[in-house]
Length: 69
Image (tube, rainbow, N blue to C red; front, side, top):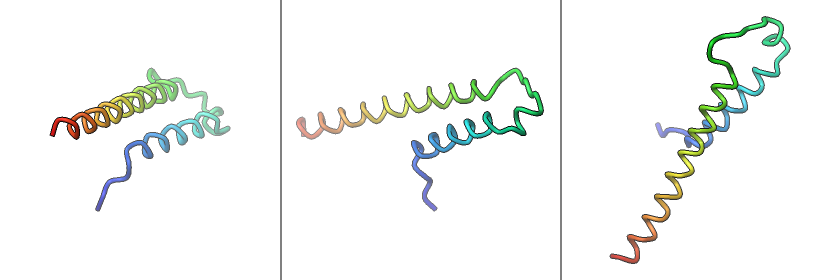
């Protein structure tokens, strides 16, 4: 079974975290852990940036290999 696209998974995770953060039931429990939803969102933002950098690098390397072959 193929894996879903990682970019899609990261976007979905960010959406879900945002929905949890805005949910009235979540706000009502007054939950304050050491690592917050904001921390998780930041981690996903960094992961997304890394994925984009790798995608850009792979694109450049693929173009370069076409010209050197």
